[in-house]
Length: 128
Length: 188
Image (cartoon, rainbow over all chains, first blue to last red; front, side, top):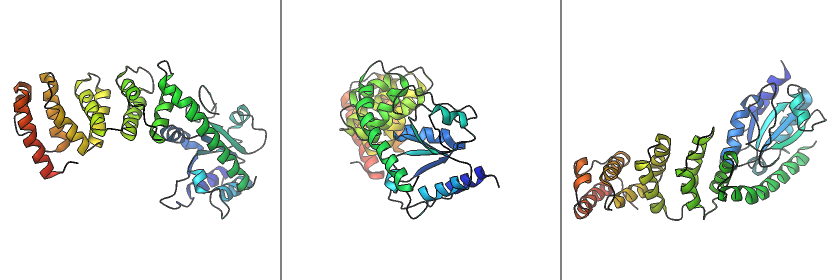
């Protein structure tokens, strides 16, 4: 099975968490536009989480967002995250200064065009 | 990168973003020449952080002409922000009801009507109060129709009554209408 499919499955199978706690907002790259709109709607930073499309990436997703030592829900609830396979968006990753197979980059919800193979951060206004 | 490091990065992002947004987004809302995207950011910031004191500017934004790709988002956001930060819900509802019934742009009218509906009892009371004021006849008729629609209680008088009746008669009719609405749904 391609790792991209595994990655998306991993993201979408995250536990829902406490109903009263801020909900983590994790989106696969195919739903980047939805993530962007949510970041705008809730006025939150949009974080692109680049991951290698390998077992390492899958493990990282599980550790960060689902494992026993995962990032606290209140932190995840304050941002909107789009998970992006680095190889698929290599040019985009380079544009954002990424030199490693994975990592975080933060944009404004106003600056990210909907993802396609030529996704670019326009960064016209606001936070980055 | 261990989760703790990632969490630390995200925490710093959130902190930086809040600082940036407080300074720049609020200022963007105040400025008359703000680009649409940044204006939307300002409105959403005020709404989501419940920053009071911007109602006058939000009203201006709502009734201004927006001809851009995010005009609908701006309308929706502005109504959300007005409702979230209102310090006087009746006054806000009155403004929204009057705009809903007088603005010739369908999108603006629809956004305002949606806001009145969401204010529920305050929206109903606001329209009842407006029906007693010396407004143009056509506006009074539209307000009566809007009230019947959102309250689901028929006007005690024919719609044309609201165009023709004087203030005293309208005052009596609204008292009857209010009591029927209270009977059915309740008021604050």
